[in-house]
Image (cartoon, rainbow, N blue to C red):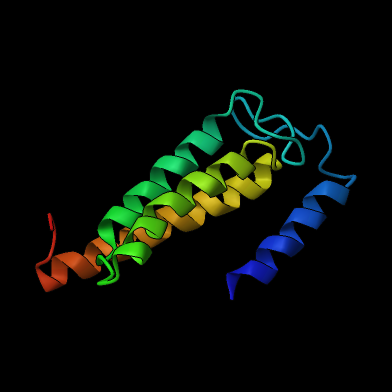
Length: 112
């Protein structure tokens, strides 16, 4: 369900004239350009790996390996994507981590 929003946001950020060189916060001065210091892609990678760690391990070993490989594959792509897109994905990861943490805590499966 999230992929259509992701693709639409990608094209909006690339074609948005109003966002070009519009200051945001700290080191991000243009949400339509890539992160100049690669901080957002690194944070996105770490949050994706944490999210993978919090999720239940699938019974299929191949699928379990893919769950750890896919964040790294996406990370390689996010180094060239607009900062706004990486920020969107990072925000989604953080909210998913919080949700999964509270679910795991409620079920008593933290620290698997």
